Length: 302
Image 1 (cartoon, one colour):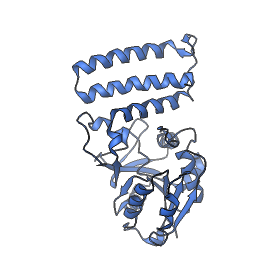
Image 2 (cartoon, helix red, strand yellow):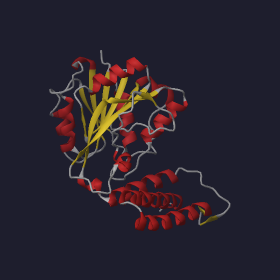
Image 3 (cartoon, rainbow, N blue to C red):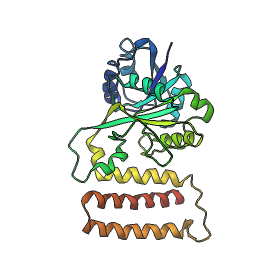
Image 4 (tube, helix red, strand yellow):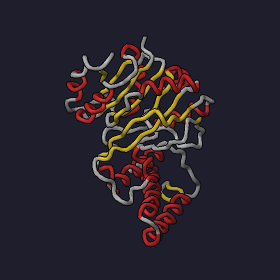
């Protein structure tokens, strides 16, 4: 009987996906108790060939193709085909520990939770620059928090998609991932995993963080550049604003005056921090500027 379904959604990362599949071969969890569903989100590289080459190396491996571009579309397709009582998600640039599935199964049983997330360590392709301190780890889906096990509330930092699991019944009761959110092709955006956790916490479903459910997340060198962070923040905030009820009687071309005021203040503060604060604090303030700029772009649909 299949107890856990693992879903990996992938887009044009065949070589990186191969590393993830190699790590999954080493799982200590019983081979006949879990399945692996890899959802190809309309890749144009050799993703399908790589997946098929593992057919005899991984238990119950299936290939699915999702033509609609978007991580949420791909995750929802995987859920449709999942047979396990627990659905675990990871990504095509993640390296799970050998006891990853065992720890998911064991912790969810002991704490009787409906969903959980775990520890995500960085595997740097190149040494990170001096400004990239731990305050930016959330932007890279890194979580090195050793505080737990503990139940999470709506005000906590919620789990990342690189290392999360849900009881399958959750999706029947509360719906699938929001297809308006999440990464779509090369467009950097997110929020679909956080929104799902928020939805089920509001429904009084227990969500836990377990530091002994461990994976490593590969961080490519280009993702340690400031321009990557700027683009990520801008596109995520733009995505938020495009669905946001931002009507205001006082506005300029549809942009509320209060948002314009906050943007100007954050720009001034960013320049002050650049001169007076440590590099990481100064750049964090700059990220706030890009957040506001993204909101304005989303309102203007530019």
